[in-house]
Image 1: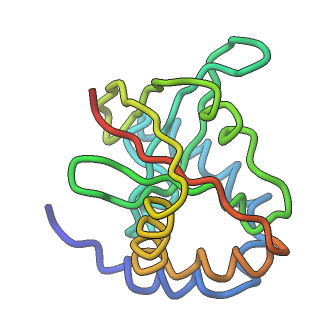
Image 2: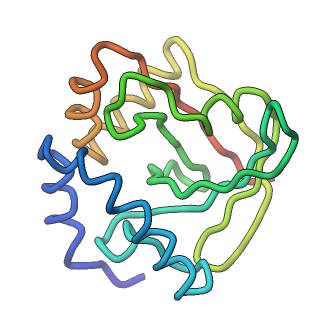
Image 3: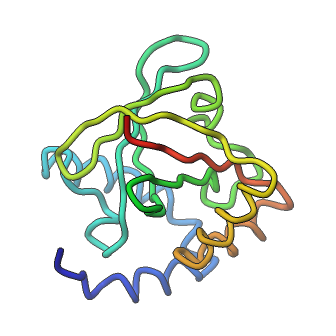
Length: 158
């Protein structure tokens, strides 16, 4: 795989608190990029960062809900962190993931099922260290979230 030269600047941008206020612009751009690329790429991919589309059944409606997320590679598995752009509230997708055992991941045009495990305790702490090494912006989001502990999940291919 060819390295994207934008990954370094993308990671640096993620450490800037003002970037967290751009969600209202980034999210519509994400939908546009996903549509134009037939769901193969998202805005984060263009910035040199890994992103996926996760589809999970809504815990109240049972309807499939799709969300684009930054992920942290973990061997063949993935970590996703419910930082919600540093909001004091947990993202809805994280509540939906808590309610299921499996979900679907879309990655570079491929879709596959994953087992969902919420990380807690020592497992969560180890994963958190890996996550902030990979994406330093999580520290910025942590400060902005006013002490909310982010939900963290491991997604393992089935």
